[in-house]
Length: 130
Ligand code: C2G
Image (cartoon, rainbow, N blue to C red; front, side, top):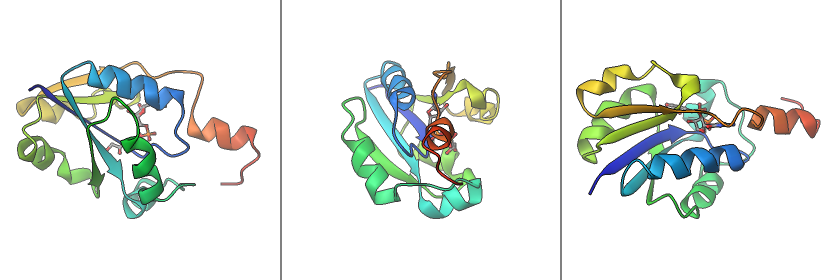
């Protein structure tokens, strides 16, 4: 079984996230999503609308996702790849090059982002104050 992993906050889940998860899943037979915890989002400087549990419930319900694990920090990726015997690491290309160190442990694939949509844009258009 060819296992894929990807990481993210996935707040205000939208079709850009779904496009990414669908293509990530197509890189193998099993997709793990490491979902940023509320605490790690503070480290990332991201203010989430939905809590970790709420975002986990949403991401787990996506047909392309087989397992959701917590992403607690920047440092866990190598351990995750080893622990879950991951073959492919996937991220949107806004991260291009940032995780090439993982090439020592698995394939690294950066996929095109869906350009016209983002959680920030949704919040702005709805008049959310950050
Ligand atoms: N994404 C996308 N198209 C969009 C928006 C997001 O393809 N319009 C992708 C991002 O490139 C990322 C994934 O969806 O691969 C999740 O996006 P975010 O929740 O914004 O993830 P981010 O905060 O960048 O977290 O350790 C890595 C970090 O946790 C990544």
